[in-house]
Length: 246
Image 1 (cartoon, helix red, strand yellow):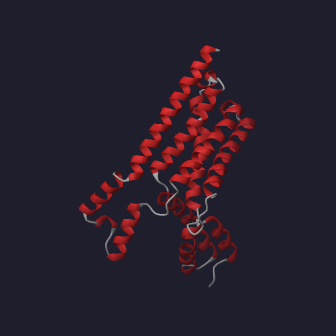
Image 2 (cartoon, rainbow, N blue to C red):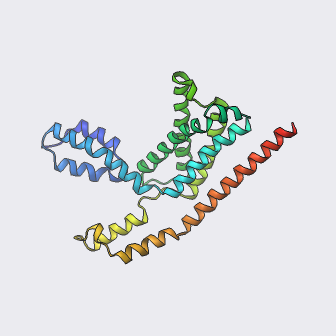
Image 3 (cartoon, rainbow, N blue to C red):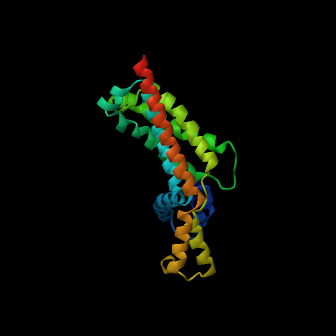
């Protein structure tokens, strides 16, 4: 009995492109009734998206993106002399709201990125769209909870600076389709289909973990984070000296 065409079309839009056909094929084979198909589709959608985020997201790159966004908003607040906002109105915590929203959107961009389509403009669209979503969330707070919103000049210039920095990071470190550790486990399972992931030889797992830890991505990520922190610190000193002289 064929699955519901309308539900399948909606599910096709909601599923990440990389695993769309596999999930739809499995659900189509298990189809019995429309209700059963709908319940299984809803129950599998969340785990599939989370699994795809885990497979396509590098923690080090996500950490750099988070720092870049937060420090962009912080630098914008310092540039406009909003020290009272930072220290007297919980500004440090309020700056984390648009940063979190933008980061969540970036993670979804990783999950829904089509591995068959690669373009130099994709990092620009992903970063601009994610930061714009954080900006949009602030416009909602402006109307509903102004006490939690970030002032408009800080959001504007912080979003512009943050989107440029995230675009640069995404161009240098594009989201990969499978983490090396996951690829290693998949390769081992192809060679030995009956071998469970927990039964992998400990020495091979240890060598793989050590290779990932000592890889060039780790050293580059640490260097970029250190450079970002040093740049923000120097910029803060320059702004402080400017205000003292004026």
